[in-house]
Image (tube, rainbow, N blue to C red; front, side):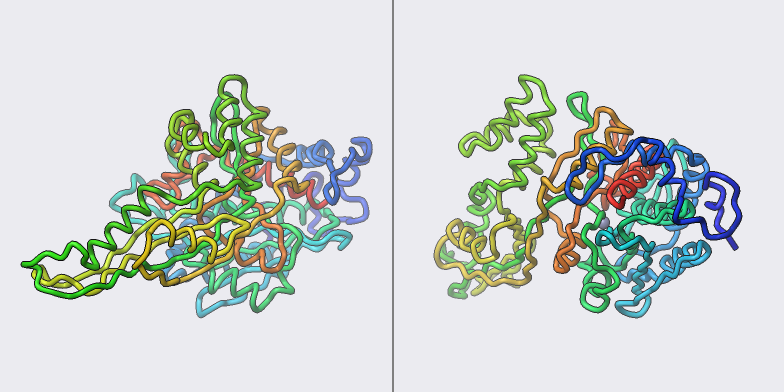
Amino acid sequence: MKSELESIAPGPSTGRAPDHRRSPVSSARDKAGGESPASPGIDCRSAAASAVLSQLKWDDVFAEAESILRRLIQFETVNPPGNERPAADYLAELLRQEGFEPEIFEGAPTRANLVCRLKGTGEKPPLQLDGHLDVVCADESQWTHPPFAADVAGGYIWGRGALDMKQMVTMSLVCMLLFKRLGVRFKRDIIFTAVADEETGGTHGAKYLVDNHADRIRAEYCLGEIGGFGISKWGKTFYPVQVAEKGLCWFELVARGEAGHSSIPDPDSSLIRLSEAIIRLGRNGLPRHDNVVAGHLAKALLASQRFPTSIASAFLLHPRLTSLVLNRLVPESEQATMLSAMLHNTASPTTLRAGGKTNIIPAVARVEVDGRFLPGQTAESFLAEVKDVVGPGIEINVLKKLQPTTVDPDDPIMGAIARVLKNHDPQAVALPVMISATTNATHYSTLNTKYFGFSPVKVAHHDSFRSMFHGADERIPVEGFRFGIRVLAELVEEVCS
Ligand SMILES: [Zn+2]
């Protein structure tokens, strides 16, 4: 049986393999008049690409994509336990119907990772399109529409995973189907990965693939989360592109003292000294650090604004003015917090443990702290900063570490992203950003894959994308999803040509 996507290809549908030597894409390129000056490794051909892609019956593409996304949302892949296998089987069947040979690798029983390749000529190394199939939990009582019903209402598709990140899984799959149908033979293979277990660290997902099937997923570039969601501001739409991810260093602070009867207070008790350390950490924060990503972000903001807003961006990187700019000149506290996190290591106390009885002073008090450090630094240099702030007499024990990741914000793919975005949104500005969370980038980058977080979606003015990520009422605007499909398809075409 063939998928409905058969109908989207231009020309008669014969069911035979298309002629790769003279594909609709290459003839349209020829008509478009050769190549523009190219960045190294990526040809600037979006005009030619859109000539081919504009022949498609996009309404049919969108209808099919929306039906696939809704079906994917209906698989309850809450992690834990994940149980991604049925969703992966569903995608594999769609791919097999189109003549692909998808593979499924289980990192643990039912923790399925789908890998599928669209072969190119091999003149350039592969491009990977990555999404995760698992989602975080959803408390149905807080939702307007049930989180796994995939209702369509008010111009949105509602459901857990609609933004994080079954939309990217669907868009990537649609790109595979489209280009297969068009008979395109790119210079790069396209590798589609739909993986398990991202939400709890990727042990059974991306990390499992990297450790056990690296040959199947080795690529020059990977497009995945987090980024691509448009933010409207100052008459522009800013599309963040993740180019760096902070390192992770979870640790505990431990204070020890004398246990005793609490009818006689001890101003030096473990609990009081630990509390003082927590307050110093919380109130003082850690020192500011320049870094290449924050520099690029400020420059990109600067270039996109008029006086006087541009002044704020210019001052952002001035060591003594950063706090002033963030506190006074950045209008939304959400943005100020994000910018601040790109210029500082951070340490957030989360879990306190001390004592068990109201009338006993505890001998030991502990707090667990979620630490994140900037690219270019180490867990050790980060902990030295923490030690300076918390002061003497407090033990620091490391609980978990992950290295930061970073790619060149000037990589030619950033230019390709900017060009393709502008084709569909003349006000678009692509912004390189660093995120504080960890994603699959941490695993794929161990294979030297250049990971860019870009899953394009046009978000409505009034929607707070951040509150929907992992929050109640997660939903994707239907128009924004359609925008994303076209942008991703054109970007893939440009990067792989
Ligand atoms: Zn995610």
